[in-house]
Every structure is written in C-alpha cells, then in structure tokens.
Length: 196
Picture 1 (tube, rainbow, N blue to C red):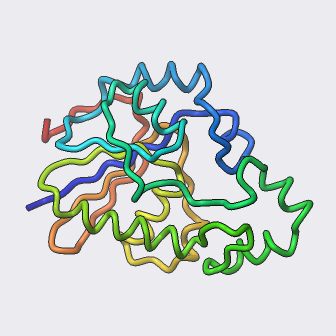
Picture 2 (cartoon, rainbow, N blue to C red):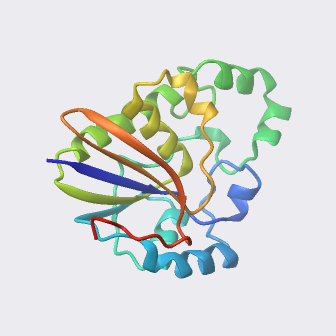
C-alpha cells in the first residue's frame, strides 16, 4: 500500500506577508483569486483535511475542496506571541526569541516548541500512512516543515532551514515507514498527474 500526502500551504494573507504569528486573519483577495484559479490543478484524493486556522479553511474553500478540520496538522501554538510579528516580539523579548530560534525544545511564548509541533505532526503523518491513496492537507507552512523534518528523519534544527511559499504543494509518498519527498510545486502550474 502506498500512501501519498500532499501538503498545500495557504494562500497569501496580511499575516503571512508580515511574518506575523497567526492571528486568525483571512486570506487576501489576490491569494483567494490564485487559489480559485488553481482549483483544477489538484489531483483527486480519498481524504481532504485542513488545519483549523481561518486562512487554511478559506484556502481549502477557494480551491474548491470540502475539507475536514483536523487538529493533528494544526499550526504551531505561539502562545502569547499570537498576532505579533517576529520583529515586534524580538524588540520586546530579544532573549526569548533568541532562545526559541536556537533551541527547538524551547517555548518561551508559553505555547508549543518546535520539537513539540514536529512530534505532533509526525504522529499525524504516521497515522496518515495507514490511508491507502492520496490525502490532501491544507496546512500552515510550519506544519509542512514539521512533516518534512519527520519524514526525512532530519534534526529538528532543520525546521528553520525550510521555506514554504504560499499556495505550493509538497508531496510525501511512501510505504512501510519510508517516505519520499517531492517539493514545492506551485499550484497554478497545471501539470498532468499520472495517477489521475
């Protein structure tokens, strides 16, 4: 049995452009238009899920997907930093930000550490491997990072070295505990899917 999980990052939003910890904002008009235009580029799936965030649910809807809300691939809980930019937090709490960026086990904001989100997303991905067929998951960029770290057995420090642009697809496919990675296809570039 081969499982495929295609992670789709949300369309652009004000918070994403400002490097702001999720504050529940909506995708912007340009992001929604790009998502609607990309709707036809997605392959069929046996399961479609979305992170609980507003921008992931709105992206899924703009892509024409009926997504089930899934807490396993939810965004990193940024605690009291929610809604603030990294620059704002860095100016107010430079030592805490430095600790958070240097130590993936640190959570000075009172939420989840990077290690915690990698473990949570990894457990969800391992469970998803039991699904025969394709899963589409519209998730926050940090969830894509955590999934890649887990699937490839990378150290959690690699989390900070992975960039996930808006409205791109990252595919993991595998069987028997081994994942292969296909990175960053832009959704509005239609290419034939041999499995479709």
